[in-house]
Image 1 (cartoon, one colour):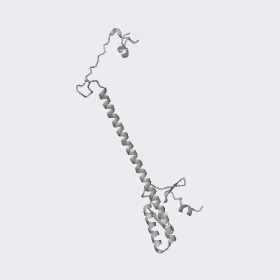
Image 2: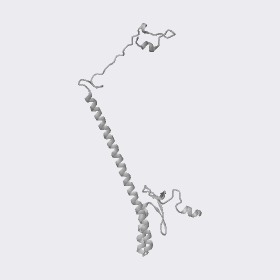
Image 3: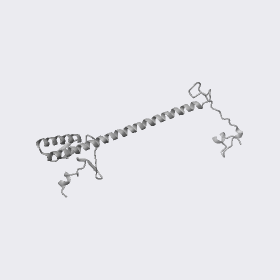
Length: 173
């Protein structure tokens, strides 16, 4: 296999032109992607927009000089990059639409959670009996710790003569 041919056409790693995936040409979504274009008689490098404008101008110039064949070749190249620009624009619009839909879904979910939270809070208020108070409203409730009463006759002794803590808390049977 000829190495020069291999390096020159479609064998560049990360090189110019549209990337290929399973035989289907994939248009890069980045508008700043730089293409290397081999035109009919020259090599041009630039973004899709720049190449479109360049080939369009070259086609007009060739038409002005009377070379209809060369002009048609330039116009075909210009059309190719025009199609790439359209694909990029469509992809950008679709991406924007998907972002907007995701944002709307997040907003709806947020509003639903907020509404449910407010309904739950309202239901808790309705379930209360008249005269009952919420924590934090009015006086605070104070709980006094209850003292455990130990009765010596209720203690069960271990083999060492001491009652275990559990045995001291257990009620007499």
